[in-house]
Amino acid sequence: MKKNILCLLAFLLLCSNAYSDDELPPLPKGPMILTSATPAMQSPEYWIKRIPNAEAPIKTIDQMKHFNEEIKNMVPENIDVLKIEKVRPGKAVVDQLQLEYDTLRNRKLFDAKDKVVPQSLFDLEIKPLMQIDQVPSKIKVKYAVATRATSVRAIPTMIEMIEGKGDVEFDQLQFSLIKLWTPVAVYHKSSDGKWLYIQAPYVRGWVKAKDIALFPDREELRTRLKTGIPLVVTGESVRVFSDATLKEVVQHPSMGTVIPMATSKSADGAYAVWLPTRSEDGSVKLVKGYISRKSDVTKGFPVYSQANVIRQAFKLLGARYGWGGMYNGRDCSGFTHDVFLSMGVDLPRDSKQQAMVGTQLGYFKPFQDDTERKAALRSARPGITLLKLPKHQMIYIGTVNDQFYVIHSTWAERTGEDKIADEKNRINQVVVSDLELNGKSWVGSLGDRILSINEVD
Image 1 (cartoon, rainbow, N blue to C red):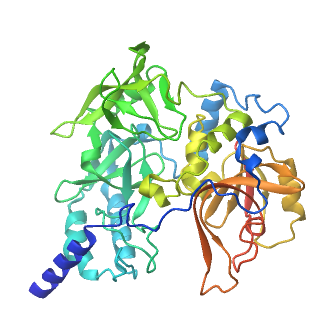
Image 2: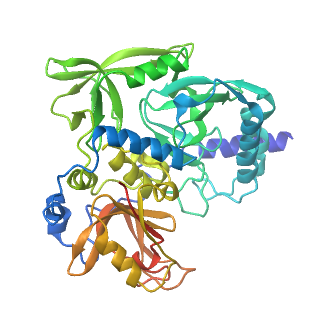
Image 3: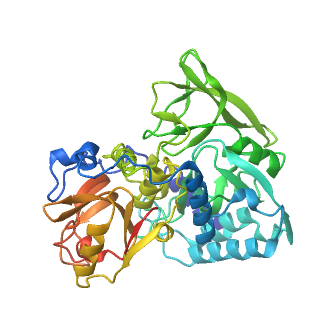
């Protein structure tokens, strides 16, 4: 046992310095121009001017509310935290915790230094932290918000665990990144009190307790979230200051973050907003923050139109790819999620769930005859149309010379025909490309692998 503990301590020390941005391979300079794309195509207006009546609203405010309710009812994983019962059976949480633990413990995973993660780490460190046997038969749910953008993890640790050696971009423990002011239901906590097991609107997992602030009850949280006109982050991110003179930056909320305004009036050229902070006892304390009126934000959501969706998507052109929000980036469905969220569409976080939303234009098998797929694309409305591939999601933006173009966040372009060698060019950013990308590789082109096409309407 003593030897095991010493080995575990050595492993933890090795993993304590997980990859930082400086240690990762350098990012390709962007925005990259791929396949048949041209420099002119890197502008949103290039695509917008090709769309008849592109500025026309897709939905009114009332229609949007109804649409978001439809999404919640259609996608079981998209949970309305404000409707979660105040007392829940503990067994479902126990079963989920045990499943996540067993699944990861029995996988062969590597750390950031390409060393195999020992099962002793799970037995001696993770399992005691999770204290699954301490989940009560009836859970008294606590309601809270994220005080900043924070990672949702499969188990309560920030140690990176990857599927293959050198695969540092894809931490298998990373579920997602939830935003400032995201409401959560708290079900359980770790033995050291540093982690909470929570349900957010589109993901469940472990988050750092220091990034979560508890409200007295569900009703007070609902009132705070539903009162007044919010300030919506419509840029890639914005700076939030602690003072009205805009000198000290305290947060960088990303696109799609919705922040309650402290007053409808501006002070000293700044919007005053409420920021949740965590008190020593874990309870919420609201403090004022300030956002410059020159920042890329709007009072309430912008008009949901084809043109505005394309403009929002192109604000992220060249932005870093990040699996589950790692490295402050966005993966493919994180990109589409943020773009539509900034328009007021409560799009689910996962690509499979996103493909269920709106009007279905077609379902396809990989590499089937492309006649039906091309017909569906020609009828699709650019900007509001999603193209679903195995483990990938893209926004369709238009057709030029019978080539179909998309904007998407992608990690790499595969270039070789050997599946084992799996040769690729690193992209690691949001790019514009046609559907021939990857076409000379073993995996097949983007177009060949489209599974479904749906309009988010």
